[in-house]
Image 1 (spheres, helix red, strand yellow):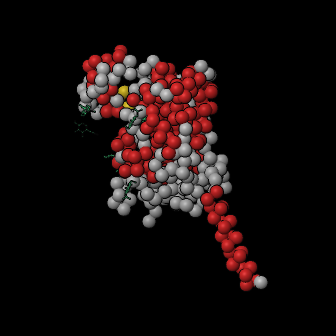
Image 2 (cartoon, helix red, strand yellow):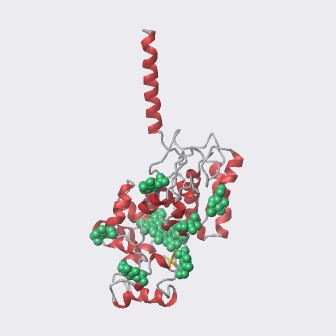
Image 3 (cartoon, protein in one colour):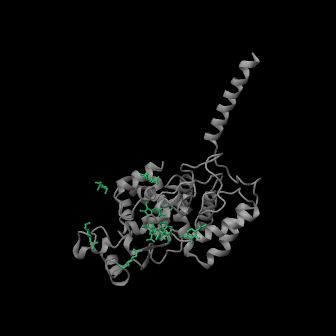
Length: 327
Ligand code: HEM
Ligand SMILES: *[C@@H]1O[C@H](CO)[C@@H](O)[C@H](O)[C@H]1NC(C)=O
Ligand SMILES: *[C@@H]1O[C@H](CO)[C@@H](O)[C@H](O)[C@H]1NC(C)=O
Ligand SMILES: *[C@@H]1O[C@H](CO)[C@@H](O)[C@H](O)[C@H]1NC(C)=O
Ligand SMILES: *[C@@H]1O[C@H](CO)[C@@H](O)[C@H](O)[C@H]1NC(C)=O
Ligand SMILES: *[C@@H]1O[C@H](CO)[C@@H](O)[C@H](O)[C@H]1NC(C)=O
Ligand SMILES: CC(=O)N[C@H]1CO[C@H](CO)[C@@H](O)[C@@H]1O
């Protein structure tokens, strides 16, 4: 009997371990025992250094989004080329990401405190969370315990990260592919209440569309004329930057949604949010509610995005350097 009990034990134990690893969950303050100072080191660094370079806050929120949409939130956006493969960093939408060196510095501080414990995926998620606070936005719950991926593939980034030229159907498909819904699409796009864009993300709406003078008829004509005169003065300008939420790009408020209803959303993908009745309904609900409603809903969608396809337990690795897989 003992002879048959042993393999049975192995099978049961193996099954439990299997269930344990696939069910491994993120948890609040995952590093409480293994690296109790980690979250404080990260938020202290953000609080100390973002004020010197406030525009980085927006870049980190966007970087976290780009990380999560490709292979899940596994820090793959941070990797340099692995095995000669062109990484996500080289993808069209990544060409304007900034602050990789900042993440590397945070990682070094955390490594000095507790080597090999805290993942780059969690560091980016926490830096994004703390960045939102530096621009006055909500404090989002960020459970931790993500592990780092070892693959970063430029084609996957180009295929999964939505383009500013997308219509509503395409945006929703890309969000649905990540387990996110219309509400998440509308709320997370609200991050465009801060930050900047380069002309190529929208200049076809100014020069190469179907309205008079090549202007997109769904874009407010006065706003378009202003952008053509004062900002993107030629169709090929690829260096000028424009505030996505003019006059309010440093405050995390509802004005992005107000602009959408005035046909002043900067990208096709912003304007597209008013072309679907469910999405427009939510925009109107946000605008008729206190800002705290937007904050609470935005924070929920951020937490949901932060759980996309995460690696936990023994999956992936804890990178030593965020730009390199462990050798
Ligand atoms: C819905 C689909 C989305 C599209 C098509 C899109 C596209 C873009 C583009 C083209 C830019 C300008 C980049 C540049 O030219 O420098 C941008 C900026 C930005 N995006 Fe999005 N985005 C989307 C959703 C999101 C989401 C979900 C977030 C985060 C929750 C986000 C956060 C940001 C931020 C904060 C900036 C400003 C970056 C900076 O100032 O450096 N976006 N986005
Ligand atoms: C990753 O690439 C960036 C830009 O090409 C470079 O500055 C950085 O030193 C690289 N990081 C490592 C660890 O090789
Ligand atoms: C990168 O991803 C694309 C799209 O999924 C795939 O076709 C390609 O083989 C991948 N590249 C490598 C080097 O794995
Ligand atoms: C949205 O864009 C996609 C891809 O460009 C296109 O195939 C589709 O027909 C468009 N849908 C609508 C409703 O315009
Ligand atoms: C204008 O759009 C057309 C069709 O989308 C494209 O073929 C052409 O290259 C564009 N021209 C410029 C100057 O962007
Ligand atoms: C910007 O445009 C210039 C001139 O047209 C070109 O040489 C340069 O490569 C472009 N830069 C990017 C990032 O596309
Ligand atoms: C920040 C970053 O890595 N940007 C890269 C994006 O991709 C282009 C090439 O497609 C690189 O030249 C940039 O350095």
